[in-house]
Structures are given as C-alpha cells and as structure tokens.
Length: 253
Image 1: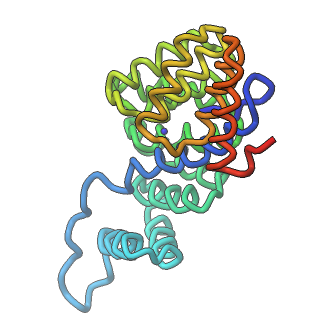
Image 2: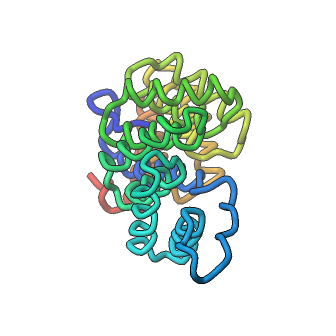
C-alpha cells in the first residue's frame, strides 16, 4: 500500500513515507464494477442501487460529503453493504481519519472477505496508526490471495522493516522491484535495509539508483551521505548533504 522508523532509522524518513502511503491508497479505487441500473418509474422508491450510483457519481465529482450521505443511506437499508462500507472507508482514508477508515474497511471485509482492495487499504491505515504487526498480517493475507500483488509486496517490505525484520524486508522489497524496476521508493527502502545490515556497497547502489530515477529525492542524498561517510568518503558525504539541504532546507544541519 512502511517505515515510521523510530530509533532504527533517521526521523527524516517521514518525509518520504507520508507521500508513499497516500499514493498507495490511491491505487485501489472505490469500486471494481458499476452498480446495476436504478429501477424505472418515477412513482417507485429510489432503489439501493440508484443511491449507490449517485454516491459514486458525487464521489467521482469530489463532493465527498454528499457521497458520504448517500452511502450512509445505502447502509440504512443494507447495514452490511460491502461497497458502501468500502467507499466510506476511502473517504475517511483520504481525509486522514484512520480509525474510522479502519472500522469501515473491517466492516467491508466482514461482508466480503475476499476483497483484496479493502484488505490492502486496511493494512495501510493500520500502519498509519503504528499498528505495524497488524498491518503486516493484512498485507500477508493479501499476498496469500494474490501472490504477485505489487503494492502488497512493497507495503509488507517497508512494514517488516519497521518491525526490525530486515532480512525479510530485503526479500519483499527485492520482489517489489521485480514487478517495477523503476520503483523509486522501493529502491530507497531497500537501500535503508541494506544500510541497517551494514551492507554499504549494496545500499550505495540503491540510493544512487533512486537519484538516477529522481534527482530531486532529498532524503536519498542524506542516506547516501551516511553511506559515503561509513565508507570513509567524507568529501562525497559532504557534497551529498549539501545537495539534500539545497532541495529541502529542513535537512540542513
């Protein structure tokens, strides 16, 4: 769908993480299929399908409060409606209301346990609440159902890295890069994992790959500076720190 990296890695990793998880959440949209057409006849009460369809229309238009109201009307009729719960969760997720999003994703999964998207995003909101073990469990379940799910591989990789399971993180992040060799964030976190193992030559390769793909990735320069310093290349380390500060003054020492 991650590293909030407590004492095991620099706090500035947060600068990357927030954007990563938002992007991953966006990867799973609110419905796989369109609802059935509404029942015809002006005299007939509006159908549940029609309410859901209007909710999706408002959702797509960015009218999230209106969409939420319509989804809740669906739930008044069908309290276990999985799509309504999922769509509400997506709105809470986008607003950063993680606990509420968690409740709605869990409700969606109770009604439709096979929903890969709901489970993937449940893992993301658990991660955001620093429930890392629970998040990892959800990502593993996604991979049981969908072994080549690229987002789940990446999410699990950075989650177990947070848990200190560095060797496993390396395996999952390497797998994620097999899916997407140009995955900038996967290269970055793989570099962090190698750095933690003091495998500095490999970490260096990963951080340089990040900067090849995206030269404006400031925390990669900071990470590269640490690796250069560990390898005794102080001039290069100083240059990398200066470049990081140029891109993001918050990284200036």
